[in-house]
Length: 255
Length: 335
Image 1 (spheres, one colour):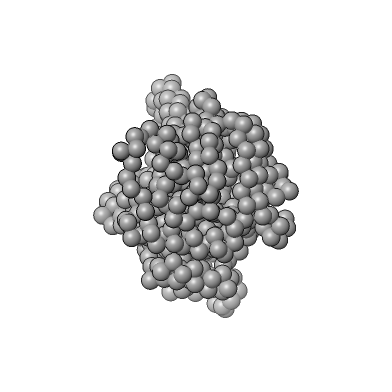
Image 2 (cartoon, helix red, strand yellow):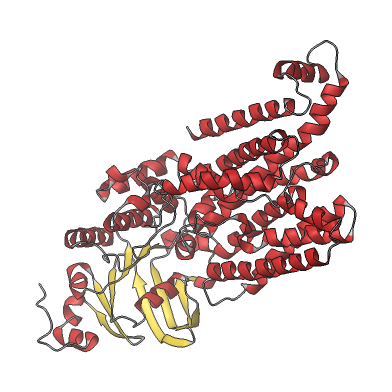
């Protein structure tokens, strides 16, 4: 396995991608090109297939048609360990049965590509600590993950994704369950990641979040990508009204 | 720090094992026992009392070793299943292995008069019960863990029913008491020639499982996260199921049904040391060995007759478990 695999991979390309869920078609004939250094927000109403698309690209949901290329590599030819060098994943706010200390949660990202019997090196430990510092949660280092608040958990999962050091990071509604202040802070951090040359794909329910920090917005409706472009250009009142079945009067003012 | 805790548990285990060898119907003082043993191995000069060394080394030592290995095997297999199923209430029997082994043992008693055959049957049917579970759960499209638990329930119920049939048809004066007594668990029948053969396998299995700590940490985060953190989830789960089943089945074939160790010991270890499986697995193994050795000493020494081990592990394990439930916030939580 090439340790430098992630260095060469600067795009993820899905062509004619399709997926089913419980025998029902979620999406089909979907084409998507994701590039490193680009923050992409994926928007759409509940049940439009956002999360399934994310999971299908990650290889967590079986695809029914099409193919996904990671650089020049066919997705199916890569082992979980190799994929873990390309994309890291920030799942939605979740519960865990066991409370591992925060620093160990982050180190699980650093050690994702190593043999399982190996221990974290001193350098990896220092890097994990500095990531916690960057995200302003260094004081939680030794706390059990299960004792954290929802926002703190989200930050730990992001620190873990960063420790994995992949060119791409996928996030499933990262601001879900966070308070107003933490939402803004988290979006700022995500913006910084984009400037650090990570390619980010995140689903969101908030058009304002896409406007705030995304370079690109993808609008999904009933399993189809109906819009693709710069958030300022495509997320206009007309699109949003159509997308979420609202009248212009119902639409709140967006800053 | 971690290595020191494990070393401490290991020293306690060794000390307790030495003490256990000196305790029994023939009560030797610990000092004279140790000098006798040193003389026996030629490390000390003096008169050897052959009866004393025979009792200690040929009668008690195999039983002490069996207690340690069975306790460690059950505890490690319980810890691993709890992590894999992301649920601290899981015990080694979740996939039906104990029901299968119990049925196998009873069938062995019914059909043969040989302890060997009974133990072989017990082990084979334990493995078979889990294979049934795996077959029932082999459906690609849905959440695998839930299916495994349900498959385990079906397989466990099936083999429990089969066990009832065996009990029903067994000769009530001879075979039935033997079956019932066996199912209550006891180490009184551990033979040293069999133990010498299986002990290395058990020890190897325990060590192999204890090395899966990092993988089990990742598996306990759930399938999606484990996969995106580089784990081949299906393969690893399969390895762990086979290993845990092997360990649990072999305990039944050696000592009958010894309940609660695989559920209680992981909890106690987690309360003491936290959730990290890299430390928890070896610690559970050592604590399991210590625990079952203590309980087995009680079983053979407390009354003038042997008390079935499974009764004691339940009577002692349940209060410990109740205490552990009052301290749930450390190490695991469901909030």
